[in-house]
Image (tube, rainbow, N blue to C red; front, side):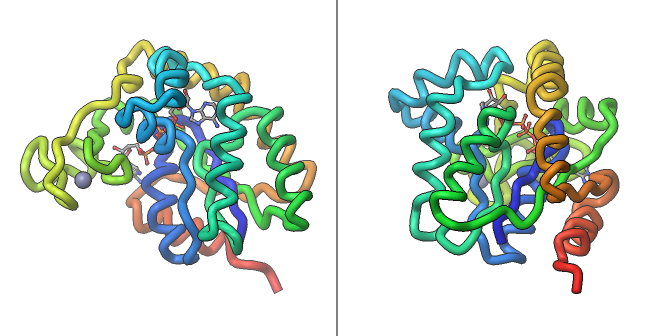
Amino acid sequence: MRIVLVGPPGAGKGTQAAYLAHNLSIPHISTGDLFRANMSQGTDLGKQARAYIDAGQLVPDEVTIGMAKDRMSQPDAVNGFLLDGFPRNVGQAEALDVMLKDEGVKLDAVLDLEVPEEEVVKRIAGRRVCRRDSAHVFHLSYSPPKTEGVCDACGGELYQRHDDSEETVRTRLEVYHTQTEPIIDYYRAQGLVVTISALGEVADVTARAMAALKPSD
Ligand code: AP5
Ligand code: ZN
């Protein structure tokens, strides 16, 4: 399956993507994780992206689209993928359409995670991420690590993302409303959007998502 995950910052896209990708046997492709890996490795791409990410702004399309295309052309993504954080504006959605058309394939669904803004703010404020692997994500109240500051999965140090500061989160939410939300209408016009509530236990949200993605007979 080829799926796009959308939702505001802190909606739980990364958390759900890990389970959904596993259940559906497709790779989880997160442009945010790719940028963070490049930043921690000090690559040119990471250097280009850092100022935008720290300010809560989108990294320019010419950088992002090339990076996403490169990742999507890896062998593990030939038969499907779950995109998390890409596309993030209509220009990127159009570029993705061209990429898919060139490959003669189509998206199966766009899964839209709906969460009220006050919950998003709580989720981001308590989030702690592993320095060794940004797919290892915890929450101080909702899913605390067994030992404070230490990743349960690999023993890495947990930290608060620089762009999770209150001020940057406000900018990220504004960017989401003005630049990313329009892609929901773009995909609705193609009949691809399924919207679910992302409130409640993580496992319940995963079950809701799996049910929504099930092809209808
Ligand atoms: P990115 O990393 O994509 O950030 P985001 O979209 O803002 O999303 P988040 O990672 O903040 O949240 P999430 O929805 O994954 O939530 P999570 O699962 O962690 O992008 C970062 C930046 O990179 C962007 O601002 C931009 O600068 C740049 N960028 C990335 N892609 C780009 C693109 N395509 N174009 C241009 N620029 C791009 O969950 C949040 C917290 O809630 C966690 O602590 C988790 O444990 C907890 N939680 C999750 N689910 C639940 C639940 N059901 N109940 C209770 N707690 C929960
Ligand atoms: Zn870890």
